[in-house]
Length: 215
Image 1 (tube, rainbow, N blue to C red):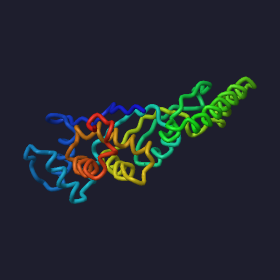
Image 2: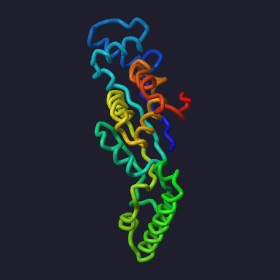
Image 3: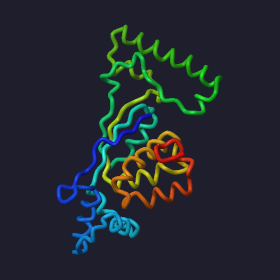
Image 4: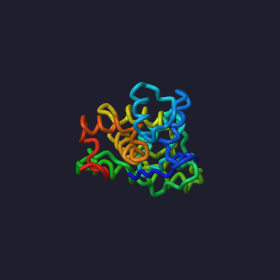
């Protein structure tokens, strides 16, 4: 799995940071002047539940190597924009797979998987040899087929996504996607994401192990 932050809202006034834009939006509401600490101002507003102001900034991520099962969970977050690798147009004769750690850790499970995956590839190629279009041959592909997707969310939706997906009930793969996205965007907007990040790193440090800032 690879997650990269590829775009971020730039404020065209002053220093150009997302938090300066969000503070400006908030100051409009209160008719107040900036004190030069946008992160502190934003953190206070988020803690109060005044989250509409953080909708003005967006972040775009490129995510590679997640399963189709994971991408189906991701696109359920509807206040976002997505561009995903298409199995209609991309040849999947030699697909990449995204497998659960529990399967990878078991020799018996891997033997089952390898037998199945070879059959999937044979079936896909056989359908293509029969003249079937890629959009029809793809019906034999499992949820484990790896995919690539670009996602853009505003900061409010990102914060909601993190709250839902960086949690105990979340599936391991979407949780790891969430953690990596959080660690990438947090340095650019600690006033928005800092309280949640600090809380989760204290409550569930195991979620952050293996990340750039984890152990």
